Image 1 (cartoon, one colour):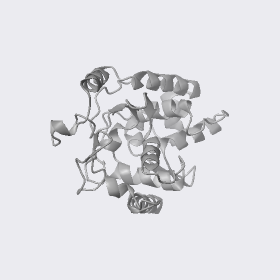
Image 2 (tube, rainbow, N blue to C red):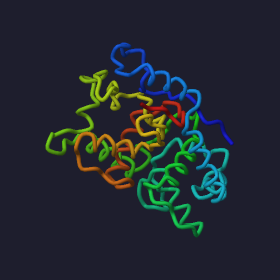
Image 3 (spheres, rainbow, N blue to C red):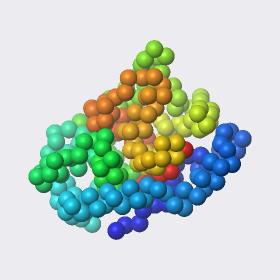
Image 4 (cartoon, rainbow, N blue to C red):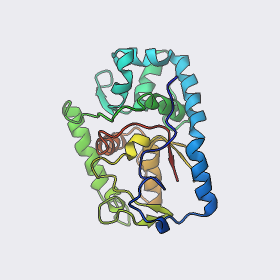
Length: 256
């Protein structure tokens, strides 16, 4: 089994020296816990559970066969998700791909919001650890449209407060503290955030996927929550992932 990365390479509490230490509104106890979890990320056990679930489906070889790639090329291929798959006729994320694999294997697919799917999809995505994100939005018209749609979702203001993803994640507010965390500019080229989700969230004491985190942001901003796996959510993941293209995959991440 491949090594699960222990340290998140992203804009988390202590990952960027560009933020002054006084900006972190954390207790000493929280700081100590964070440091400890960097060495012993609870999500490692959850991904290990996902590895067991994958073995029931045939392991890495089954995923490679389903995707039509050689097993030794699987890690690099997974680092390019979300991607367009002919079998689906649309752009899909890793969890949706796994639903297809389960269906083809004669097994009832896990629902996207289930613990089993979070663990399974997180493990499979972690197979790309140490690979650079290589999503290709110019691979075909489907990917081009998904990226454009994702940017539209990111920029569009919604709800009574008229907020968008961009409202809290743009250069003019980078470093501002919101709910004890410095706001990262996730639209900045080279941002590594997408390379470290799924991640363990200290505030939730649980594993969260990237789309799941998007939903949390929407709830906090009092926006209508976009469903997991919807065209809007998948497109948003395409956009967000492309902004981190080239960053090295390091899962599971650790977030406040």
